[in-house]
Image (tube, rainbow over all chains, first blue to last red; front, side, top):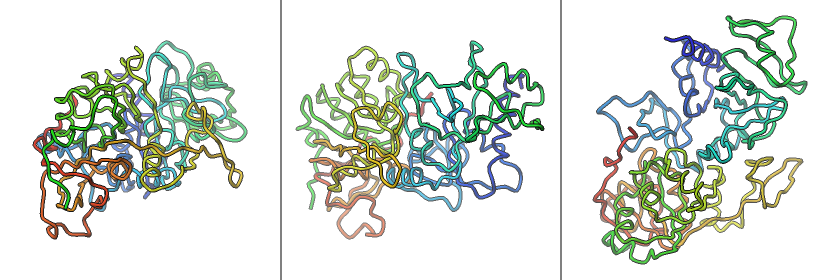
Length: 219
Length: 226
């Protein structure tokens, strides 16, 4: 595995550790889906798929794909024993009504008030919000999984988001290749740093002010 | 009994400029036979209301890549690059709606509700032009009903009263859409006599269905994204 991939696995594994046994979780398309592969031994989580089921399992085996059963990205998957199917109104009632314990999704920008921008770069990338706005508003806990800085080195954790917002004040935890940050009423708290970085490096890579507690754990 | 007709007959009134809803999510649950018939008919300038535009060569995505849509209401268009291109060029007007809101607006239309109050979109671009209400100190957007002249639904089994079974993840937005259009066509892989369907297994009650078409392009035709 190359160094970048290793850092990605580390952040994904850290998020997986955060999810308690029995939690109902929605994992966004892309990097967040990998969280399912790193759930600690002995722990079981229930995965909610916004297109209409709970009990999302692994990708379908080649040659055994069922076109009636896909994940939110349109890829053929399986459903685990004890799962259930439902329509979109029910799916989003589960989401918006506060029944999803954790949602893990990507981010373009997060700011010190817990605002998240992750669905659009005007004029460049307009995929649409899909279920993201409902998920961020409805889920009990919102975890953003992203690189700490963009491809050109610009910070992604800002004083104030500049891109169109997905939702206001809803982010609870940010996990990057460098840090584990909790969003609190006091602001952003740097609870943990990656084992191969320093607090100084993280502060330099973050535009928003970070509260640094007496003890900063490593992951 | 509901009429069992050909796909061509089912789409004959979907003229240029019509509005239609198509059930499905990333092609899963798209009525492929009906979409092909509509493509063959050549209608354009359509207002299309659908969860997403799948992929350029799959189901509802073809309506986009073959230039039939003037106005699109969808929740996500990222998997079909043609949708983004046409939006940016101004060729197609796109209204992006949060998926929960999208479904409740359609459901409200079908269910006789004047609108829905949702917290989704507060503080975002979705708020623009909408009424906000504060109820018990929480802000909500007033979202209005969304319907269409036509709806194209895909079922696995349908009896001749129109009662449909939609398996697994094919249900998605179709259940709401069947309630919210003036003329609702269901494309079914298997059409059975009344009494051959277990009433407990009905996903969409037949009361919403206008006509039934035998599917000739079943779900197994779904091409997976390369």
